[in-house]
Image 1 (cartoon, rainbow, N blue to C red):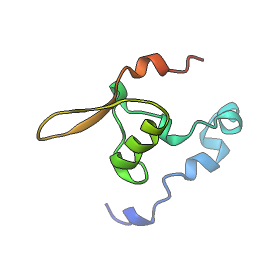
Image 2: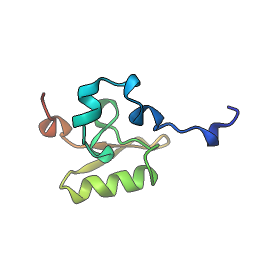
Image 3: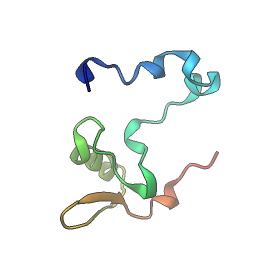
Image 4: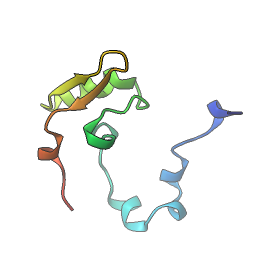
Length: 85
């Protein structure tokens, strides 16, 4: 895509018209505690999967590797650590 490196993908977080007011004021969840579907680590986070894995392991989570060619990493038993609102 053209100008992909110049886009600010975090702009919506700083613009209150794009998010509910409650969320912009109170949502302080660190990015590394958010996962993709089924507990998968997100390779697009700063530092990639390795950094995401390291941050979660520091907090006591177990990371498992799945796949041989298309390797993906998941948080083991992530359902037990879900925050229910």
